[in-house]
Amino acid sequence: MLKAAILDDEIRGSKLLAQKLNVFENELQVAGIFNSPEKALDAVADLHIDVLFLDVEMPGMNGFQFLEKLGRFNFEVIFTTAYDSYTLEALRLSAVDYLLKPVDTEELEAAISRLQKRVNEKTSLKAIRPQKNLSTRIPLPTAEGIYIVDKHTITRVEAMSNYSVFLLSDNKKIVVSKTLKEYETILDDDRFMRINRSVIVNLDFVTKYRKGDGGTLELSDGTEIEVSPQKKDILLQRLF
Image: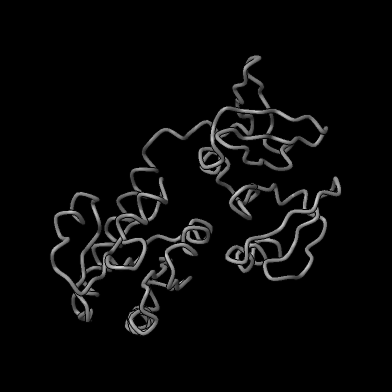
């Protein structure tokens, strides 16, 4: 089954679209609804969705700006908007479809059909491509040289300006001249999660969760790290 999320600054509009998508509940599940682009930036990547239904006109950050700020993403996009002047831009981004509000049910059905076809094509391509190196060891380039570390030994990665600090289970620290965003992609598996703007955590080293607005994680070395409120629900699902 396909997983979807909706980003629309209008609460009524997002709820209406979710209701229309209920008709296709056998093919598609809505995993998240967001009414703020800023909150969606923190949360949407962790939902592992197949498609984002994305409103174009939003205050502060439009749909195209949202995707640009998000950076790399693996899901497909279906734009939804009350205006028809963005078609070329949507095509440039290779969106699955472009739906005008109010969304017509037949057009929505056609868009989901195109979505399924594209997802199936991507799955087929992955099947025939040579598999990536499945090694759990990753290179960390530093000023001294290149460290080769096992992912299982990484307890967390912290942002430090344009650098990333890797903290290992043997208490070693390795400073790498790449941003946290770059390593969020490299460490994209069930073990790791970015729990706020500054820290990626290896969930295998979590020993306790303390309740709060977003809550706090305690790691096996005694470190306590605050969780972004936007990440809380996804984190709890992955932990428990």
